[in-house]
Length: 325
Ligand SMILES: [Mg+2]
Image (cartoon, rainbow, N blue to C red):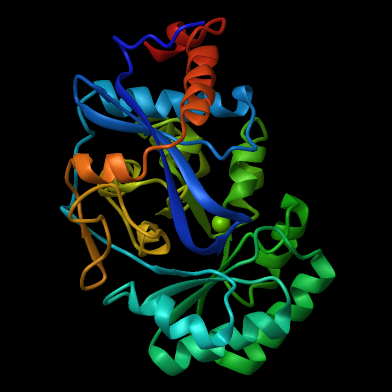
């Protein structure tokens, strides 16, 4: 199979080092290409199969070929994202998110997590803190740990993101009412479930441009779920972040800072200037990659071939093009 280069114009694969390990990876690989409306990005994580990556490619093509949705604002408030790092590195990580006073902290083990919260509050005393557990706790652990966090730090928590995997457990935690609950992974894993089950399991829905399948798909889903949304990145380059930003701008109501400052976790963006927050904000605008940076972070030929095969496999698969229309 051959990549349809007339559709995926200037197809380029980049491999960008992360400053520290995040969600189990040290490098982020992304594919970029141009369509009639501008640059776009296709970057499902490497462990995702072709089937799971279909919605990502739909989002990519959508952004490359269709005009951007109507925008209700030109700047988006951004939260800092703190990976699980040694406590002495917290200030260095947070310093890259200038002006961000909402901090999302990845947590797993209670003591290590509490150390990160404590250090964050030393650096940003008025911080609004979100904990992202990525479904790591069972119901009993979640109740214990949430109780301990609240006892130790009081009212600093804006919400707890995906404390447990199961919707039943999340519903119990929401019912406990001690803190707001956000759903992230559970949305994508329960797309065919009745939306009341999501609505009853959380207070906030985390939506991501690529995994959800683009702007329109995100709005349809948000309407069905009926919860306030937070737009968050899937660790895209500046190109993908720009599409996430316009998605955030296209919601009439946006009550929370968005998780789109993640370029600060990369060694470098491929856009110049990089798409990183200033004064806690990011501007909504189309961006283009910088030729020098494209050269610098160009992936090896076998990786380009891998990505080109992945794109072609999905694009040529049964029914895919019909679904685009
Ligand atoms: Mg999450």
